[in-house]
Length: 180
Image (tube, rainbow, N blue to C red; front, side, top):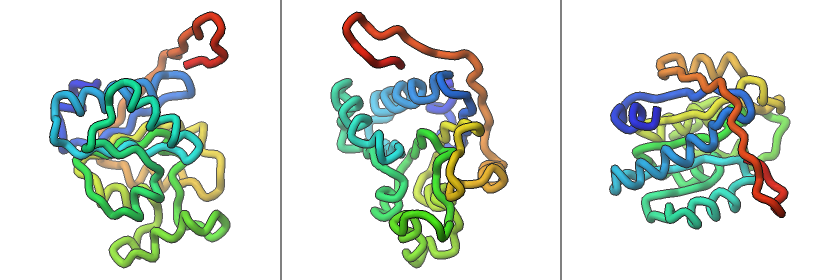
């Protein structure tokens, strides 16, 4: 799957999978391979706010601290208005839509003139990236302000859909208290 994505830079993908099927592991390996094989590609990894610092540290520890790599939240990425060769979104089911009952910073992106007609962060990310890879779990959309299933289906209608079905868990080493 990594090779397929790398060798089809104009094709967008939705990687569907339940919790524990390896979406985030696939994401990190994909980004590592792209940084290695396509050294001048601008890559953005979109993560949830509570995982931003951890993701930056993980990528840095494993030597993926290239100046061509940006790891941030969807709101920060959109506010920067930077364009990328590849945008990979972890937990894309949690991307926000234009919704009045959420933290105001999420809706600030729609005040940017070129994004004012957009209805979701996903729609804007599609304008900023040449290739989009979305890690998606339909069962994990939990907030009313998340992109709805119908919006997601409409916005990704032309995407290649892939499915991860095997649970992928690792045992923590002795003395550690984390899982995959």
